[in-house]
Length: 562
Image (cartoon, rainbow, N blue to C red; front, side, top):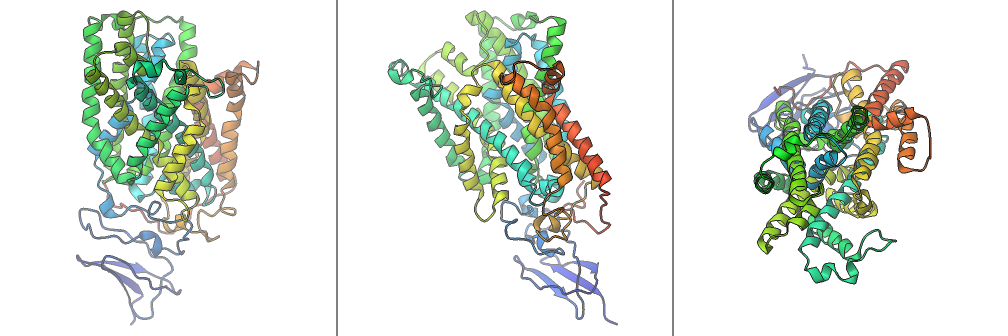
């Protein structure tokens, strides 16, 4: 009797996996790293599901699971940056994930956001409560979205293929990339301001330091911006491994420098008594009208990472490691918010006015050359660690997903940096209101619906099960091909989730002079409204279409992960 099974032997351990098969022609392929496939006579396979060994069991296993599916992987959908991570690439522990958040959180925009709340009239404790509440809310979608990255080893652009379609995934990934490009410009401008401070007085008082109306800033400040912009490309050029090493080793340095800043403010302001006694300048009605858009702005602050967090969790050792690492967000955000608010409040005592921008604070502090160098080093390090990890990885991966044969991670990163200039970040940072209400709240209307659709699709419709081989094929019979590669239900839900927010945005930027109050309410809660409305609409449309999941075996990358 002839056996109807396929046996796979993975050296050096000699693991054996048995799979029942049906009669079709099975193409024989060559695989690297001493991996062999032995087909017994007269056998064939319709679908083989491969469960790779965990990293601690075999660091030599490099067999790519997407080539063992029913469909041939399409070369336009795969390359080294898009393929699922292999076992020995999954070496990011929970502690390293947490250190990533230290590098992300400790930065000028985070400090500026915290200080802006005091600048807009909140008391210190109201500002901290707003930031912490927002980040605990965001922790939920952050962990949920990070799960498929840790479980299947896939990046955000590949995950988006399951809900938006193989071709439709370009839309959410490019929207996320667009926001990342804007943030890259903002962070680079902040770094350029730090360089500007180091310049001698005669340079800052020259004609080149005078603003040009058509440019919106001075040629000298713009030149400093370009210098810092170029300096970051050296790290980006070395890829994701260099970024990960930078985040790991910079975390303790940033924590030390943050403590130094806190000690300085405590000493010079005579303690924190002024901060603790600083009361709100807002009435009860004014506070609540400010609280909800501020909550939305704080959620929007990291809503970008909440979308593309699979780009990082795909390197996690296990699903539990990614959860432990994500808890670092609200903890470190709360701690650094306290520092930002304490220092901002102390400036009222020290200088006679509130200074929420840390760059301007450095100008006021003055000090010797060594003090300035140390301060500039701290700002530059904080800016680079945040900018590269948060604002380069997602746009670069989105461009790689758009055309794997054209873009590599390096090429995508360079284009991201170029687009960052086009955003003219110096205009976005002109005031606390433009930064919080125009930029942060505005783009949350784009990212909220994408997150809602992806989570509804992954958890409610698919039960957190994905077929890796179908994510890399353009075969019309593939599970995620939908209608010509586009999932129309997801696209309609995305559009309907964004549309109601647009009138409020037009009112905020002054394009519309007046409108119903409901537009302001929707805009001030843009992330919440778009996230839940798009998710519900997508679920309803999918249900009405009679979408049914196949009973065929799925292929998780980490079946035994705790």
